Length: 171
Image (cartoon, rainbow, N blue to C red; front, top):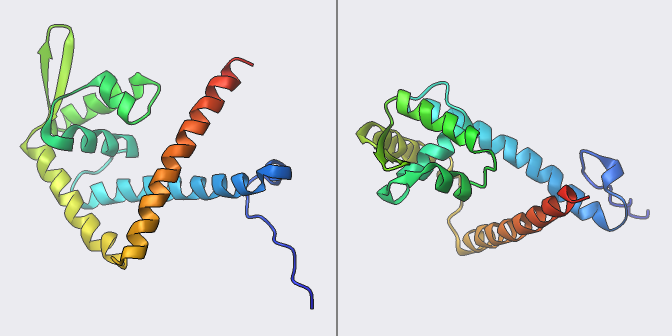
């Protein structure tokens, strides 16, 4: 019996023709993984004690907490690759009103840093992540290598998508 032809798993078959079939499969996987990751972040932060936070709120909080350094709005948006600074600003105001971050004005700049409550939530998030997510990894060298390579490849593709977005804007 002949092997059946491989059918790509895609969300939009019309995008999976010609040379782009594998890219379409990747994009569908990225959509599913992105939605799962966003859901994970929201549920983990909720389990850590913070209800009604969005995935963006969680990302902004973790970035502000990163290396215990003060951050500016523009830098947060840049690092998280969020083009619309209003989205980040909304999260910053929300995090401040929740009592997780401090603000300090220096000239025209506002700097954000996590306070004790913000640091405690990030620590609790970490503990839950270790318990329910990281514990599911095997921890062997092959898995670590694959995750490292996948991260490298995602950064490479991010650049490709950024360039394509710029090109599409000028069409």
